[in-house]
Length: 465
Image 1 (cartoon, one colour):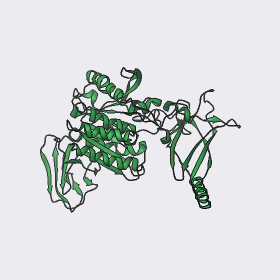
Image 2: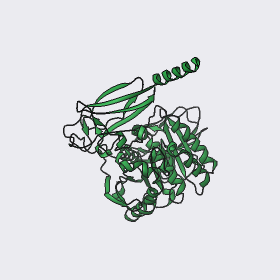
Image 3: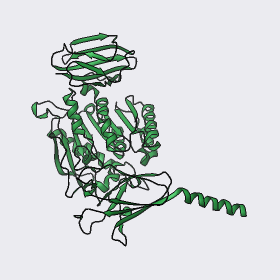
Image 4: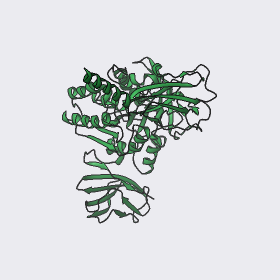
């Protein structure tokens, strides 16, 4: 009896020593905060729901907003931000700038005092950062499958107005975060700046359609199946909106190449989940899927079973990534999904763990160019569709005198070939020594460089100035 009592006491002591709570107190909020508005905390612990009533702050006896969270085991990390119920009202920095996710690591019981300097919809905004070739197609585009409205963004390739050619299309989720820091709630991807830079380097870039998420409806729309803890399950209706309503409208009103081999879908976290699911479900529509930090965990059993049961019907290129610091729910499941996709016949699947990467826009922004060049290699590089081609890393671009191959092992390079846009070989260097290639003799213009080594064939484009 005594031993049982001591074991119970010991277990209780152990539990209390490794589990803790935290109380967040807002010492100051903007003086222009509307009277009567509630303040919420949103983070990875509630699916980033910006207006979850279970995570609304309350005023304490000092009339300061506060909330207590936990208990959680020691070492548990929360990423979070404060909102007034939507991502359009998320907190901003002292100058209205985007701020990084707040971070708290549970240890002992804690009280954390914090300040909210600005709201996204208030004064002090930093202004739009969207490039000149980004536009809002419609602030209230109707979604008949869900009976609601949504803002739709467009990125037009820099030369769109200068010619009559048609372009591949990339459909992306969380449109608020793609192009403009002013509308973002967790930082922006800088899709527009990245693609404009690639265009300056001679790569062909696509037409991009950004679809705003639904704020409190984000989990609902970006999950194919209901989760007992987080809800959701409207993913089929959301994808039907893209396939049956939005895509036909875009193809009718803009110069696009509508075929599946020129249509991609991309997103992060829940957006990565719905992108993979959408590409598997609509293989006749999407030929490319970019799945950044895909949150397979929220529908784990269902998504793996669905991929296995559906199998390959047409060729699809899948690009997955996850940050080194995101944990096994992301990294391990990402590689499990790669194995599952390959086991049912998909051949073009690549996955990468990003060193130092976290579950945030910075990580996804930094890898966006790599993902685009891999998914759209044939179009971007101007080479035949071939699984052996990989993007080549080199600098500078544009170049005057000398190209430097960034990741090249000089002992492994067997050949370097540079061609003009007509396909004529203008420089051929078998058995290159070192990683530098002189291009002084080339005329100004656009060129394709092809490097072959024991790891495969690598292709890039550059501009000679």
